[in-house]
Length: 472
Image 1 (cartoon, rainbow, N blue to C red):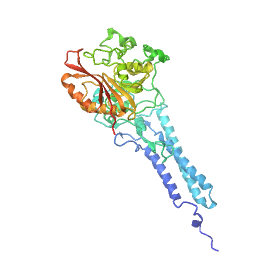
Image 2: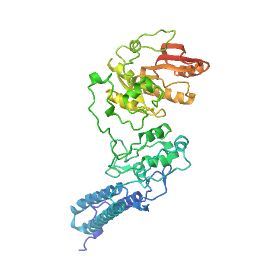
Image 3: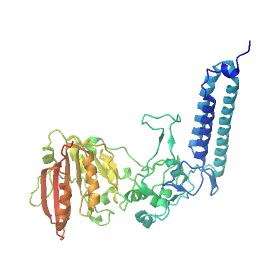
Image 4: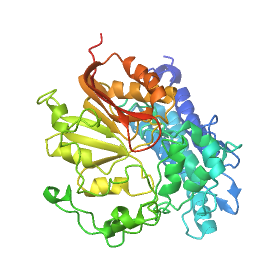
């Protein structure tokens, strides 16, 4: 009797398994090659002038994801080997083929280790990931404010950040429904390449440069969000534990808990002293740091003041105002007053020449470090109230105002309150701005327009509490 052919005896094998194995390994090798040659970096925004697998300025920068890719390759082939070794003896040829593939993966791992050793020896243990020299001189204001002519990034760490981050199991979707994570970075960062390179020019797992002022300038100029960094933030060297919440709201923070290096004032007394007026480095919310000035509690004359009291506003929605946002130059006083009334407020502000965010946090409140051009990090229809003072002023163009107002509308829940607190502008421009608020079609609950008398200009104050309508 004629023996059955070998091909017929292997019907238990999927017909395309050898091809699948080849494609799997070939794809993994290509992935490793692509990562090592820097093709994975965003071509539209981050066009690199150097290759990751090449030596630049005497240093070789190896992608940190290469080792992970090789480990994934070994794991995949190992699973296939287990399945094959448990099958019939007639599959030895295919098992041998898979063993050879595993040897290829092992060789790749050794190659990666050799590259790492070469990199470590060439960098003399400095653990640098960027080919950009650390230059911490003052940034070029013209580049930050107007953008540079080049879109080329040289920072290896920036490319590491922007490279697609595949899941641990290649080809498998995570709980977010994606196979890889793309980290965020602002579009206009491409217009400020040298300063973004400088921002990313640090040593990983070492101390970050004390450069938050550069970061804030980049944010304000549209490079927002900034890329994340893999370094440790500096802390005040003599930091003391914060005060308990029952006393921190209205107590002056300790000087030792603030890093003063980038402020004109070098202690808290400078922020509140009458002798330093005009020399403090900030002018918006000039009395903010005097925590004895509470505000929003004493009823005012309606003909001369545009300020509503907090209790007056909360009575409009008894028991309904629980969470909200204060978008203002602030040290958290509005949020502190609301906290005393069991309302949680996030205070969104920048450090405009003084430690606004640090003081908010030291008072036991929630600071939200956010630029004016950023989309609010809240989901739609979630906040009970949005309050703003000393921010919405006549300096704003109508386009910007429209985007800001519609973003606030997005996060406010139905029947939520928009509290516009002392908006001011020239009197002949008032109608133009009021028309923009009217286009929201909110219900007017409180409304007040009074002359602004603290300056000689013909200006007016406008305040309103508006209710967001239901929309289908």
